[in-house]
Length: 330
Image 1 (cartoon, rainbow, N blue to C red):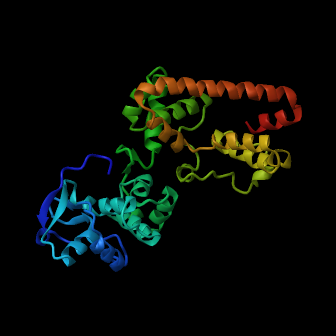
Image 2: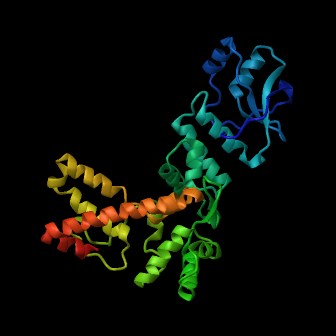
Image 3: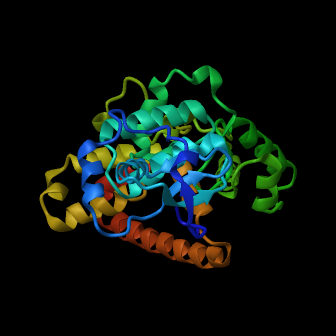
């Protein structure tokens, strides 16, 4: 936990309730014996104040009992009882006897069932898994019928799972008043300013406010037009977004030995690949920029864009055949 814990106090062992352990095989006897033999002062255990249920420290609790102790140092925490299990998992992932991969996956499944509104990244942070693994566990957890309309992210913000309605509302507001500030539109539509910016760009191009295949993009996948191999797709439909066009271009570039087999070429491919992010990834980056640095980051992004534009113009003047292909896909 990142916040400051309260001071520990001595509590009678008889007053404590055993934890709802995230360990599939229970406590480790070897670890308990090692703690019994340890001469150093052990850290206090963590206990939920309202229920007196142990959140973290079952091995230390067992060791104290076998030593014949009657009291143990305890830090009492005030959290919702429904968060006890998640807190226990998070603390056991960060220190002490590590949870196995099977323990963490089982814990992720249980947390998803207990709190369907928690985002994949939040559950990933708690369990020490990747957000992609958590997403796969969620799809296997058969909780689709109980999905919440929004999820709570790791930053505590509530975001809708399906942003289609918010995008359409933003589209209407911008069509009525193109000069309306992005943040005002975002607040009215219930979406992020970065999403409003994307809607505004789509409006200026005459595109739909909602990206095609949005669900696939939300999971980080880059879908291609059905039935069209990536290596032969030279011109994609105008409705396909820039991320999809970039994916097609990169697929062709990565297959060319002239780029793959020299350091400069591989470096260029890596730099281009950094921009291959779904809309939600850009939104996440924007959400984590401190407000007092927003203008500075925006200026830095504009400088980067200007450098890439100069680089593109230089290449356009050098390779007419390649530039035709790039213009065709753009």
